Image 1 (tube, one colour):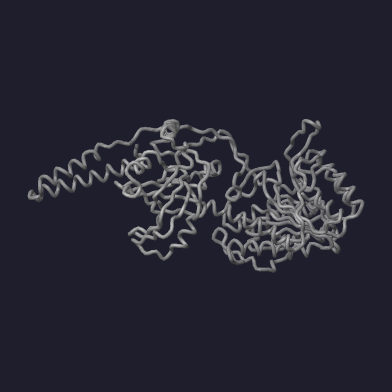
Image 2 (cartoon, helix red, strand yellow; image 1 turned 60 degrees about the vertical axis):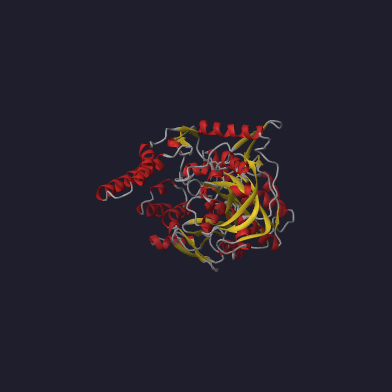
Length: 583
């Protein structure tokens, strides 16, 4: 077996130090036994002559393992088993034998365990394996005296790190205190063809971690914990909503009309129907049609697809939950939002106070509630609610350094721009920002006391949008007018504007009861609750640019090398104004 380059350097340096020490002692004390000196020289000489190993290709490593597979089959050993009985996992073992003393052994029970070999150490007639399962790792203790010489030699010959192994044995705790399975029977369950990442460096390259998530979870067990927490959050939200009388109903992913959000869709085509389709950018319109049909409390937690930029906050395929409740308004959605997020925090962290990237966040309700105009007024001293002059509004924004304001056509759009650029990032503690301009909220009901504003809020935490909600627009005539405005924008080149959704308008004309809707971005929520800086850290398989794979493992490091071949499209992407499909 070849040593890694760095291991060779360590041995070389150590041997030189030993040699220097021995020679010095020999010269200063001739009485040192000549035979002892000769033995030391024999040990040191091969170490001094060791050289860094040559580059080993992945193909060569793979070929060596395939050879072992063939040898096992010739010996009537199946390298790819069908099943294995399991009685204990690593967590259960450590709990059940927590009080076993060092040097002690419990022969009263035999345990069956399985997992992946992530480390292997051989000391003469003893072999130690570190066996990793979904809950952690446990040591396997293999003694030649217990296994028999032939069986023991087969373990040494055939088992590599990365292999999936089943083992049976008693429980012992070594003299050093390591709880172990004292193996009396073993079985190869799956022989791995490729080696695990280099044990000295692990899988540290961020791009490679996202691409090879399977290896990422093997090399970094904390990544598995993140996805376990994600499952806790999503199942908990469903449980909470079910307990409140909401029904989850699936809506179509393939749609003929783009609606429910301001975002560019992915396009596809149905061969049999000769029909152009898009992947859904929101579940909103179909869910509200269900409310028209008499389901007063309905939701869907599922995947949304938007053909937009990639960043630490955006992935083109993401998860959101959209919730609709008849006979409620947006203030009741604030209460519901607080309950769902607080419950998720307590499930994952055991507390309403968490830390995100070094900042303590308090999720204790009630959250701060403040309207958009007030936040902007606090920054620039200009009251947009009382403004009637578009030119004056634009001047305030341009003077504040927002040159993009010169291209906007309404006061509401200027107010929204000022908020996004001047206020969003400063909203660290949970804050409901309320009362959005009508121009950026095409599906929200007009505010009952403020002209040109809507009854809408967005929840911000750590400067990021987490949730979006509003009192739903139930006036079919007003909704058609807003859709027509969106269609005009789309015709003028705005590829994020929505279409006129005739099926939805037809439903509205039959009457939608007073309804409130809430959307929560599951990915961003899990980022917050698990203290992860990037959305890619909480999505098992995030969208990635193309790459090529080299088939060499430098200096025998047993690690794959990735080479990027196309630039990544980055950008803030749509912040999803006027819709609930939050990332």
